[in-house]
Image (cartoon, rainbow, N blue to C red; front, side):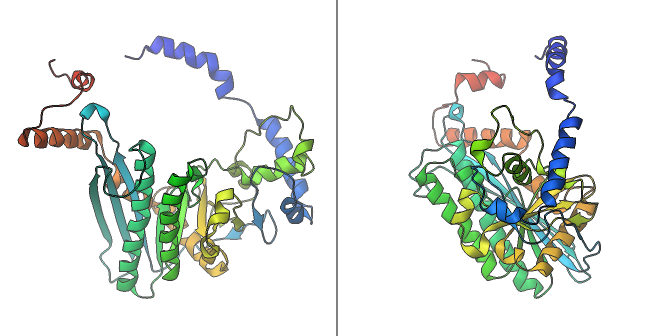
Length: 375
């Protein structure tokens, strides 16, 4: 039970750290941003900078804003999301469940308006030759693999059905597989190749693909300011400079209005260099009203301004329909999420099937106690 009196005391103790007044620091940050944006050689300086932190590359004016069409007309959007029940050693059964939810919205006159579906899949860890220990990381990797593969299957089917109508396949999260950079080589090789294969499959069919990140914490533009402050030489950075307590969104809000996007940037994280050229990650920021979101797209879309604007218009419309967050992503999440009652049903079904097969109850006493069962 949470002691609320003690909680209040704890919150009061750290309140000065939680609610910092960063106004002066931001004024200095913004002043540096304006200076570097006025430098005609800034793109070249970033390209040749001697720093270890990731900075993007771009064409055009760094702080440009692009207006987005508010009425994209006829289009179709599909989204895929996944949720999971991790392996629970207290259950005594080595398995995990991944539930993949899909949603399709049609904004035309001839199609069924909305389609919802979900697909639960159960795995024991021996279906694939992973050669990896069953873990939460393995489940997470498998879930993302199923999301991407599900998007490929859905996109192919919809493209065949809809013909030349605009179709967007929208994912939640990042198309830059940051989490794989820190993984061991076997884990990375296994999942990276699968993820990229899905992106390449979508590229071969020219299915518009994007991911949306709400309230992004990315700092690639902030990193440009950081490099500017040390003369683009990390060895000259002051020891007491400290981390900048801002994300890209704080800077983007100074020059983007609602319904506008930034120029397109190319990501230069180490793992991005390993993508095939056609699907190397690019991104732009989009002001949807309530927030500035980050949209990530593969290179083949990023290189076509008309396609970029088409993707941005559809995501902006989805955000307007979803009161600030793309409605297709929200509904796909609802289809995918495994709620507490569903989780309990899953465990009860496992226990019942075990009894039907005359298997002894191997649930741990700890779990049984938590569920209020007599010991």
